[in-house]
Image 1: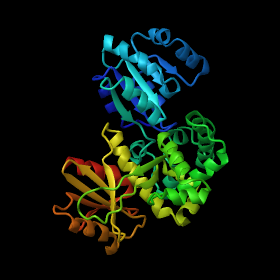
Image 2 (image 1 turned 180 degrees about the vertical axis):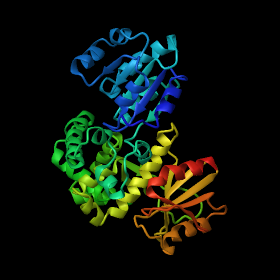
Image 3 (image 1 turned 90 degrees about the vertical axis):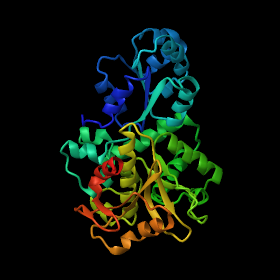
Image 4 (image 1 turned 120 degrees about the vertical axis):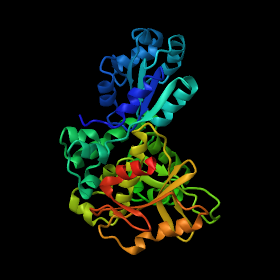
Length: 391
């Protein structure tokens, strides 16, 4: 098992709250992490039909079998259990009694907010980070990472990423989507997911998405919500301020796992990635989600945004830290050119107080300190984030 950064925050929250809820994509490593972090706790998998039936038909007896608590895996399969947990933890509020996991964030959060508000810590585990891979001694290569993605099982079992990601999509469409909603034409939904991959790193346009797939704007919105709910796509929100009224206020579309986006785009080798017209968008996706992993895997909230005005001036990533901002430009090239700093300069000039940090992340090998910004290799994204937060 590759050590996970979130372990420290997970164990810490379990000393403060009677329940800890861990959400994240399917196969992101939630089960492995929880069992490793709490080896003495009973483990119950609610995906098992007989276990699930017992929990549904007699929830009090089911939970009564674990007075000291347990790990309840995939809690969204029996969401009514959460209501029965409330009186149990109110009566005995020892910290760390129950550890809940779920891979459908909206459904899980609805149950939690209704019954366990104030009683549970909330954490998110995304697939492996570059920081975790590097810490385990695995060599890092940009095109290889874009192709392979970060699902732990691919690395633990040495799987062919093309085969593994294809199986992931098939399982997701056939099982998870059917659990969430009844979609009559799964082939059309799968086409929708592929079209979303073709818009990676771009402003979200639901009307255009719907037109390309042959569905209504309303259906496109509904299906995108499903992709968000099951941790497939991530919408990076625009940063709003009074800098100018002519700012873009539409989110940008990314995938929680860049390898999944690459597979959906038809890439089957590093050569395909290197020559793909969307390689720059995929590198941007990689860095944005790495920044998100840095935050989530330390138990912190999402504080990421982007900025773009009506003239196309843009900063790929903004980190909001109280009154301070860090602005990050992301480039897929390995040779720095002066034009790469244009967006950072334009954005800084618009603010009454310039960003506390300006940075450029690129596919080259060297860290640099320039007047316009600090320069960081893609693989040093976590180090960049640590420097931002330490200052």
